[in-house]
Amino acid sequence: MTGALRLGGRTFGPGELVVMAIVNRTPDSFFDRGATFAQDSALRAVERAVDEGAEIIDIGGVKAGPGDEVDVAEEIRRTVDTIAAVRSAFPEVVVSIDTWRAEVAVEAVAAGAELRRHTVRRVEIAPDRVVLDGELSARALVGADGAVSVVRRALGHPVNPDRHLALAIRGYAPAPPGPPEQLIVTSAARWPAYAWVFPIGDGRANVGYGEVLRGEPLSRAHLLDRMAALLPGVDPATVTGLRAHHLPLSTHRPAPGRGRVVLAGDALSLINPFTGEGIFYALRSGALAGAAAAGSPAEAARGYAAALRARLGTHLRHSSAAAWLARRRWVVDAVVGAAGRDERVYRTVVELGLGDGRLDARTLAAIAADVPRPRRTGSPSADTPPRH
Image (tube, rainbow, N blue to C red; front, side):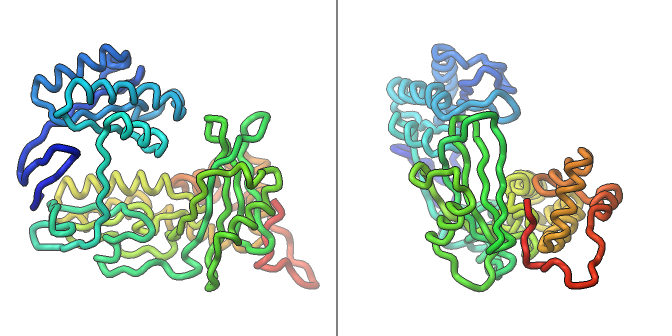
């Protein structure tokens, strides 16, 4: 740091070393195997950590890896009372929570966790460091700050142009009754575009609609109208937490970085153009970026570019080709038909759209077998969406 770091009532000076203790209120932690799951065990661990010099206590209620599903209510039950107890027993200690859920964060802050928000406005790239807003400095910087990335702008890269940028809106509605299933409905009027519904395991479903931008502004009202039209089973009055997002597609990626600065996730336009999915790319690119930055900060961009090319290069070329082909109705019809008959084709297509899969000869042959033969009079329009 070039300046002081203020967390709640504490101030940590430049170069000061600070110890954070992590206490997992989970029964299946990969580290302690549930040793601090019980409240009394967790508080004893906090007391021991503070006695040994910890000045920040981080409380977590969900395992960082595969495991049983933990809903919002259970995560709050596991963490919030512990935060309140730590804050009461050790008022001088900074308390943080490890969560990605806004609902949990609100309850945690009310119980005494520290909330720190800092919006980066300026990035300065010096020969030996990267400085943010003249206050924070590091040997390397990973810009994982989304579709309107400040770090990306600092590197001189504009946002994606239309046709390489999508806009989507999503919210949460009561999950439909019956067995959980994912529903995708394509849009004839705005292809390529689709609406979706899929349960998230806590009685709610993620619902939304998105389409590729084509040179005309899209309003929130338009997105909601299209979602309502394609999802008649979803009552718009029950949808909460609506948010719109730009989705920069991987068909127009900037350079991965320069020198000590690298980009990951949406900031690098890593949204699958075949499906609009970006979580896998965000996690994979973030891990590669972090490893490159930690391993050789001065050459982070060079190492990251090589790792990204080796890990995702072929896949990104295949997903871009698939997205281009999917503009044609008959291609998507052939893909769905082949996937319905052959589970290996199905899995290949899913991995291509949601992971880092690649097209192979077997899959292409199965799809080609389903392509309709040319007709003498006319042919299906490339602008007409698939019938699925």
